[in-house]
Length: 368
Length: 214
Image (cartoon, rainbow over all chains, first blue to last red; front, side, top):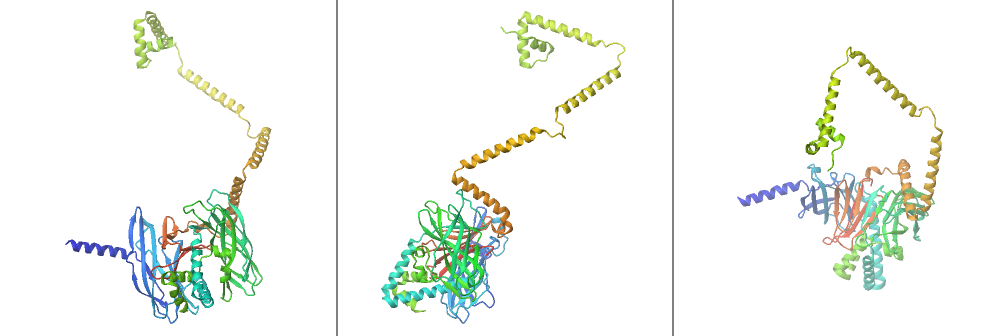
């Protein structure tokens, strides 16, 4: 009798929890298919007047296309919780052959008032895009995944080529030194918490001031930053304005300006990027405006006090779809070396070096 | 010994004192021959007044008396209104003194403003200017800037454990491992990202949250 009651309770709770599992919605002609899903450690608990849903999804996907998958982006929405926003989970640097399976993990948390629950599916997971090894793309691309995945693939190719050249020129030890240098730079790079509000305004007591951008001019950049400013108040930076000029002979449709902030102690860190979709003919100038506010809350030590800013062109997409990215020589510039994180692929290769050592890393490079 | 005054004795004799004063005065009168005599005189006078007022004059015309009283009341009211009009300044008139007062107040304001501005420390002046500038941008700039009001309440936040999208006390969080190898990326177009290498799968994973305009 007691065991049947316990079993009944378990079935009841699992039936109730089934109502909060995500709905995975893939198009009929999707190049990937879900062949297994596991939500083992997920839970839903009441916390005061709110419900907390901890969702740990371990999915097994299959590449049902004839091409190798290099990257994939899933769109995550929770309309009941955040009607004004959405999330995404992207997996890059993949190498999944036709009909091969691969695992993906997604860890989400939803916090919503008890009375807000309407009994519907709280989380929807959809496919935003898939990039293949021939740089072809599939998907709705609502989040600009095509560009993001293609940029990541370009950087991956650049870095693999660079590391292979190191092995060819200086042997495995040269590669080891480079990887160790990269790990050291990663450890030294300052990390900050950050908050962003679109259209926000300074909330600090400190007076807001306009600060001019200094620019890091990269010799091969197809875009020349002409000038710019942003409003700074203590640890807040907002409303950057930039003027750029296309100095290439091809029209440009997208570019990103990296934004380095410096505090009063001379410490620099990469605050973010200012992207712009535009139509910039050769020799033409254009202004870039963004109306968002970044705030860098103090984590432990003294609050950040922003004093100066530097901008640099970090990527460009031409009208014909081709891309310009930073070269390894650009990344070796001392100022960029201090602030730029390694690329997706470099981070993956460092992880392989940590787990499998130098020979495992060389074997991985030789796969491509 | 302190004797009650004339007023207290008059009220006591008429029974108009409060309980405590009545008891105290009565106790005094009982033991004081002078005050008892005074009370006796007051009672006699009251009795005389009652007798006099009890006899009304012959041929008293109550209607005429009422009319006279009403007429007196009307005269009083009219006199009050006349005095009130005399005291008030006429509405149609333009007092020359008003302009003079305004000029004095304006000059004083200018002097005060100049003194305030000259003596304001530089940081506070910057703060005031930026606040005024924001007021100008908010009032005027809305016509030409992004329609930001609809999404102002969406907050994106990257911390060491999660990437949060918060709105009206509700939060969607994308979790990541606590690690030094986590890289935060910010796009001023309205998205925050966190990149890490999944320890189990070895995959490079990038979580992102976006506001509604993205």
